[in-house]
Image 1 (cartoon, one colour):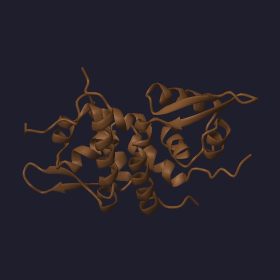
Image 2: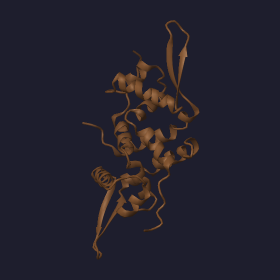
Image 3: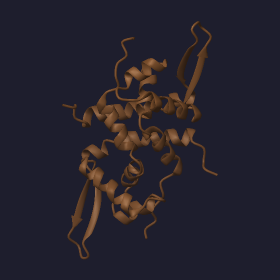
Image 4: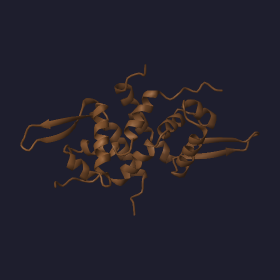
Length: 107
Length: 107
C-alpha cells in the first residue's frame, strides 16, 4: 500500500449535496435571480412538484436556502440564498463554464 | 408567468455527471495523483469494488478518464484524466474550498 490520502469526508458531503438530483439546477435558478417557487419550477424543465418541494426543504435544512414568507396579500413565499448558499456561486460558475466547453449541445 | 430562462441542459448533464455517487471522490483522487485502481479505492473509504468499477467505466465512457494498460509484468492498469477530465479541476477545487469553509468536520 502506498500512502494514499483519503478523500476528505467534507468534500464528499459537498459533492453529494450539490449532486443530489435537481439541487444543482435549483441553485443555478436561485443564483440567476428566481426566488419564487413557480419561477424556480419554470426554470427546471422536467422536475415534479413533489421532487422540487422535497429538494427545497433539503436545501433549507442544509442552510443553503432560506425560506421567506412575505406578508403580502396573498402571502408570498420566496427562496433566497444564505451566505453558505451564496458561497456556492463559484462552484456553479465553474460547472457551467465546463459544461459549455465540454458537453455537446443536445440534438 | 415571467420570462424565466430554463436551466441549460448541458449544465444539468454536468451536475449529474459530477454528482453521481462517488464520481466527485474519484475525480478528486485522480487529480490528487492516484492512478492505480487500488490507490483510487484506498482514497475513497466506503466504496465497494462493484461500484468503483462501474463508476470508472462510466467516467471512461464519458471521456473524462482514460484507461491505460501498461505492458509491464504483471500488466498494470492506470486511470488518467483526459483533457475534458482535467478541465474539471476548477470545479473540484471550488467544491473543496467551499466544503472546507462551510461543512463542519465530522465528529
